[in-house]
Length: 361
Ligand code: RAM
Picture 1 (cartoon, rainbow, N blue to C red):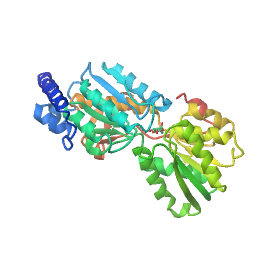
Picture 2 (picture 1 turned 180 degrees about the vertical axis):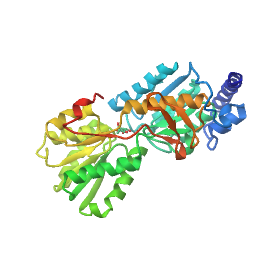
Picture 3 (picture 1 turned 90 degrees about the vertical axis):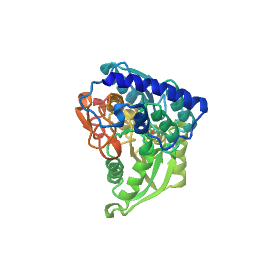
Picture 4 (picture 1 turned 45 degrees about the vertical axis):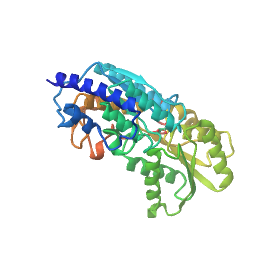
């Protein structure tokens, strides 16, 4: 029965796609996948059926914030492996710049035209992708965001790396400890529009208001755009501008690596502290040469795998993205969707000299 409904849904979706594309329609805001599903009679419009069969032969496309970024290479490989296990196909498209929002929009539109079954997107900008993502859902494509979210009505599920509160707070705590609880600090972020970094930075600012951190002053938030060279130059600029700077938090794998590279070749090595979110493979050398004491990250491959499994569960009708729905997520066990359609694979790990060699990503 489900198969029949799906078949007719697909036909409706093909017609809807053709019509939408012929009209060049982009202003379909306000319509969600539920609406689209209702029109076509799909099960997704109604309640989730956790016992529905897991569909095979689907195509799930990954659109990371940035291709050629080792963090996303690992995350997306996790997605690819999960899809292989589930009997579905993987593909990846994306821009090499972390600030090419127009490029991301056009990839979403192309994937919709190609009628992929689902897409997993890490958004460079929360709002810019909304119209295109709503159009995708309207055309029957299941939409998951992972790593960096869009607005909550522009996707069905957001696979969040870990709790944003924990990530923001712990990065401040790591740096506070390293600088002895006082002095000037700066943040070196990714793109100015990046949803994930901005969420963590908001938490960091709140954390810094606590009495325990009253002697720490955040002097600047700089943006390296997840571009290695720009992040390197921004680090240099911060140190020139603030000669008393005691530490930097860089909540981006590209930024922290570039900042470590700059510090490690400068007179500030070991004196200006650096923490944030990095991959063990990028940061190992800087931990060993005394530039960095501690940094943290979740497992990117688990994030990608969970995004793939959420996409397949949506497409199979096992979930619709509502709070309290559950789905099987392989090694991660049974996942429960939280408020606003958010699901998370677990907590980050703090890396230092003692454990950095145990990880390979
Ligand atoms: C960079 C990206 C990504 C972020 C990681 C920590 O690779 O900005 O979105 O989650 O860092």
